[in-house]
Length: 177
Image: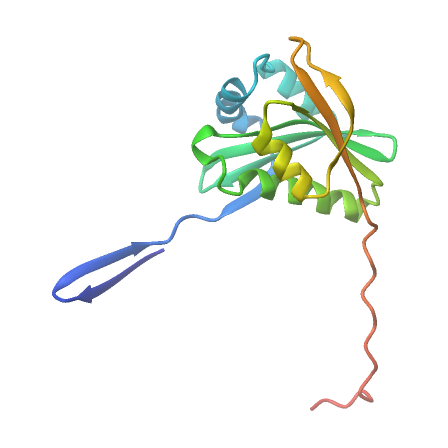
């Protein structure tokens, strides 16, 4: 949205930034996802690994989109009554702007709606920004994890409170006001 105004003889143009939305990942997103993946991980997934995840009906893949651009994504694997977030990455140009939080909020809300009891993920010990975000969302360290490249990490998890049904309000007698 563009809004124009005149102030002291100067035209001021305000351009509202596009909203970030969380959507289901599709194959057409993979070019953008792979750029982010390579910037975020020492051992990035291949296009075929993502294609395989998308083809599996039980794996959930989501993207954070700003306009038409993918700025982050998650891949979630169900394990019994839990979900493991196996991939979470944000474009380096959009880090520390709330994109990771939006992605995780969507994961947690989806888990709550589906009655999932627990969400887990892994994080490198050196990634203090991610660890702080996860802690703010209620994740707690559940044990150590060693990455394939031998880097030290942590397993973290949060217990999901079930969604509560809406509490009915007393009727006003059925009369329209």
